[in-house]
Every structure is written in C-alpha cells, then in structure tokens.
Image (cartoon, rainbow, N blue to C red; front, side, top):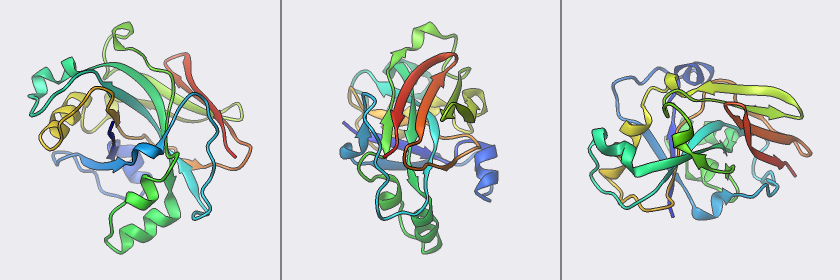
Length: 205
C-alpha cells in the first residue's frame, strides 16, 4: 500500500505559505511511509523533533483496482471511495528543508502523519469535484475546503501518478489542503467532516 500526497493544490493555501500559484504545471507529489497511516480513531502523538506540527485537512481517495498509464478520461474508474484525512506536517522542519533545497520526506512522511477517517462510497455524491470538507478542533471550525477549487483535479492526479507508479488496490491519495492550516497541541480533539457527515475523530497526545 502506497500513500501519496499532493502539495500546493489550492491557491489560497499557496498564498498563506507565500508561494506562487502553479496552474498549468505538473502536480507536486510526495509520498509517506506505510507506517505513517493512522486509522480507527487512534491518537496522534506529536513527534519530539518538531516544535510546530500542523494539520492539513484534505480529501482522500482510495484506489480500487490495479492501474498503470491511465488516461485522464478513464481515471474516475480507479477510485470509488473517499474520506477526510489529515496530512500532518512538521512545519518548522519543512521550512528548513525547503530553504536548503532538500526533499520533504522527514517533515511529511513520519510515523502517524497520515490520518484517515472512515471511507464512504463516492456514489453518494454528485461529483468528487463538488465536495465540501472541514476540520473542527475542540468544537471550533478551523479549516474548510471545497474540491472545486483544486488546481489539479482528482482525475488528473490519478492519471499523473499512474505514469510513474503502478497504482494498486488500497493505495491512498491525499489531494491537497486549502487555506487555514495551523498547529495542534496536546489534548486537542479533532473532528473531520465531509459535507455534513463526521468521518474522522481522534485526539492529540
């Protein structure tokens, strides 16, 4: 099972990171180790190597069968379930790595950094590109997004990844975060919603 992440896929998030929009260019892809996966409401433990661990709320899609070199027009056939996930990022480390021109593996792919909620059938919704999602921390909404605002749409991401990787059943794709990322603290309680349904809930330790 592989875990893929898409970086810088919402214009508003680029603005808060003081990055320039990347429309027309290829998606920014990174990967997470399989040990990054955190499910079933298990607590997230803030790692000791960061002083600023930030949440990034995202739509996550799960690949449903084998595929390679998938044309974008057929990409929708390769996923049929979605959920809300958190791409945890050691932001202080990421800023240092970026300034030194180094890859993001350490700040993005560490154990427990890919939290996913309960998957639901995509058939329940009109379109993967018309989904609202949000995150609440301690009962207060801190981030919200709408998949229509993605720079690179889900089908393009699936097709692009399949040019380099054999996509397999169970592979996960974190499709990017909107504006509103921020730090978590010990004892925070996080809840993730897709439309009005809560699919994700866990505590920070």
